[in-house]
Length: 264
Image (cartoon, rainbow, N blue to C red; front, side, top):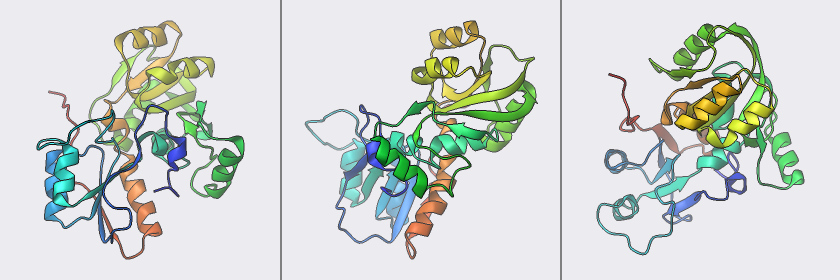
């Protein structure tokens, strides 16, 4: 995971890396998930997994107790290690935002905001990952060119690529888009960067109401997929990469992991 998503790229507020377990323990089977819920822990226990890689951390803030009902307690009791890459995977070359950018066939891409690492480290990681991304560079969000398309056509492609039936759209819907930005998860923090970058469309998981109003006032079209729907697409890519790094280790995507919201 450090080779795929260096933890030094994570946002300062995040809690990434090995959160529960023994890093020296034997590893034979790994389960990948967006959220480490009780059904996912039960699936890991049933399938004999030694570790769960959960995109979202099971621990954010400092805690003084671990009791029954908390995910940290449940996985420790089950003898399952937990690793979370979260924003480190977002920032990494070939990570969450690159996979999301692939959903709109973005080219000549660059980060919307640089990763919190030294210039030398960023350059080294970009070079090491050159084969994994069309125009690789670590950092948060992505901005780049897309083939001239209508908003309607882009939205249809996003639905197909991400496997969602509905999205939320704010702003002009009758424009041609040639430059776009993406931000997995919550896009509010990177909205000013997208506005400054002069994009016509921003694809993200969710925006607060007033951020959506700000985007519309700035002339952006915003497409929101729901939070985890914008992140779930990275699991298959992460599975392939982990399997190439860990020959002999079984790596599976959870079947119990679910988007908590549904359109009705």
